[in-house]
Amino acid sequence: MNIIEVKNLTKKFNGLTAVDDISFAVNKGEIFGFLGPNGAGKSTTINMLSTILPVTDGDAFISDFSILSQRDDVRKSIGLVFQDPSLDDRLTAEENLRFHAKLYGVPSNEFQKRKQEVLELVDLWDRRGDIVKNFSGGMKRRLEIARGLLHYPAVLFLDEPTIGLDPQTRAHLWDYILRLKREKEMTIFMTTHYMNEAEYCDRIAIIDHGKIVASGTPRELKKQVGGDIVCMTSNQKTELKKELEERYKKEVKEKDGSLQVEVEDGEKFLPRLFNELTAKIDSIELRKPTLDDVFLSLTGRAIREEEASDKEHVRQHMRMRRRT
Amino acid sequence: MLIQFIQTIYTIWQREIIRYWRDKTRIISTLFMPLMFLVIFGAGLSKTLATGNFGVDFVQFMYPGIIAMSVMSVAFFSTVSTVWDREFGFLKEILVAPVSRVAVAFGKTLGATTIASIQALILLILAPLIGVTIHLAIIPQLVIFMLLLAFAISGMGLLISSLMKTTESFGLVMQVLIFPMFFISGAFFPLTAVPSWMSALSYINPLTYGVDAMRQIILGNQVASNILNGLSLHAISVNALFLVVFSAVMVTAAVFAFNKRA
Image 1 (tube, each protein chain N blue to C red):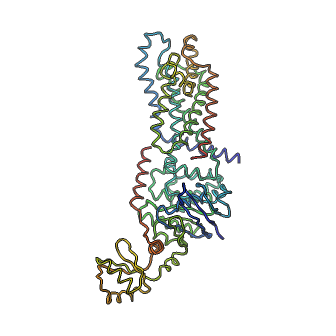
Image 2: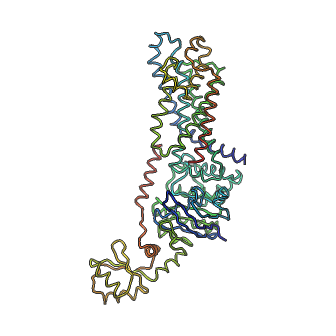
Image 3: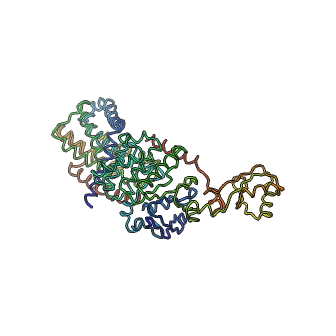
């Protein structure tokens, strides 16, 4: 059964097309990843699906409710964790949950039961009485996930859930997300621009310039790249490129100043290359394809990891917060 | 439907109250400002004015203005905090919930009204300590005007915050709206003998009506009626009527603007 069914969804901002006629479906109980660089249209899509942003064209159904005509039903069916923190940090963890429960009409006896359940799921039960201001970034994100689950949504939306977190916290958060899928059989729709995180997803759709350029399981997508990746650096780049193209009939791609080719059997290709090649190579690397390579082969560009700017963004937020 | 509507108003209101109660520095600092005005202006001007024929003790004269000022600043700050909520994302949590935005706007306005009235009540309790005489019998009447004024200003604050795009314009609003409203409200000097442009502006200033009414209530049984009449602008009932109409317009406009923009 499809929990999310997106049909020709389009969003235009003043003539600029942010999301361009996309269609896809998400099955019950899977983690579906929306992968793409910043500005590709991921958050715009999530905002339309969660009914906060008006749709220009097309429609989408969540648990068979239309995002156009059954807004309140859609809202009750989804849990949301936004890219930017949306907790009230003057309130305690429990108060934030109670606030949410009241807005979603969760009865208070039911709330008593559920708050323990969701807080234990993210290991914050012991911290329930603490003011959120004193929480770390990872704890806040976990609390937001717990909050998003409180009204028992059919699907949980996570918009860049690990953004601004350090690598260790990020890995830790993934344990919780996978646990959610395992123990609750929760359907999760998430966006990310971290290629390695997309590997955790059951299925992914790669989005670029508002269009879905590929979708499937990570394994299927990586298969599209075909074989292994050989990555070379050289100060005779032009000669090397020419030789690779002419002698081996390979399509050469440039990434971060190095040349890349896809070969079927890397282990056999390398010795041949060493024997025959006349252009000099400074270094060579053989590896199995990653989703990064998939993106590169589909769009001709690499997804830039925008770690520094993300951290700066969060830091700025914290500064602003302290001022109030 | 109706129960959910009321529950939403209550929930939003309750959050405002919890936040207020937890922020003790805010409680103290918003009390400090009006008290400082009262003590400094009172000390500075009461001697000078006593030599003329002002007819009223200056601290006693200024006190209702100070209450109105406190109501205004607290009510305004509390609703404008919506802009912060928007900037820091908490508003998203509210806006994505399956609840009526009209209820959210009402909850917010009522929360600010409550907080502003509590602050004013604290000032009222402090009155004897700073040498202001208040008869217990007039307190209910005073409280009604505190609530009316607080509601009017909260509605105005929410309207402004719905129209404001960023927190940066906040300073501008303070400069061009709030301070002039304080000064042309009759809080510091009577508006009976001012230039006509100031008089005209004071007619559209809700604070004027709050100050005028509260002054007549507080001074009513303390000074001779001819002196009081010389200081007052409108009958108490006219003041009340203006505040009710102003509140209705502001709150309706705010609810619309909030529903549309937020």
